[in-house]
Length: 202
Image (cartoon, rainbow, N blue to C red; front, side, top):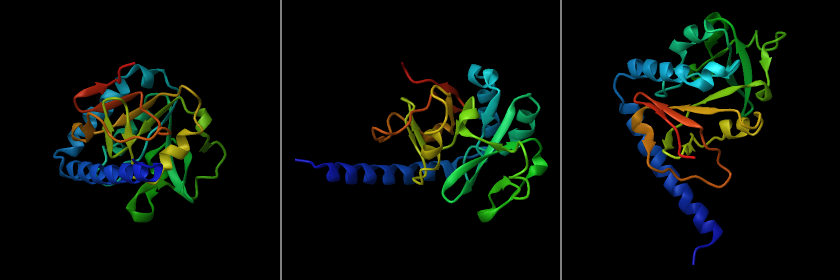
């Protein structure tokens, strides 16, 4: 008979194996720049994006779907473009108005310049967001998401307005029929790949 601890250990082992597999696939993905442009265009064509006034984009790291090349286009659409940065294990949010406001921080990750973060109007709170663009390692057809295991976005999403659309970006190779999720995990409203928009069945 399984115990809660056994079930938890099994879940963690499943997540670890799948995370490693999805990372390997994502790292091996060819033409990341070209596919990322297609994916970001799909995102901006969604009704959720067009209706949003304040959009949280993530800033790509390593082999994630590349968003930074799309920021100039997003900045020209009239919406508020917001990007996250990490402080003590939590994500703070910054209103981006120019690419000049970004610089390489720790681990060569692009982030808002430290001298701008406390300027009036630059700090954005999760409750102000109309749309969250979410990164991840693996996703499934139900909208299930598996991140890097640090919980940054899990903590952030606890504070957005109820009903705020969550749209994930992924290469098709990161999408599975099912990924292991826990009862507290948040599901995406859509997963967007180079092939189009995957919307979970109601």
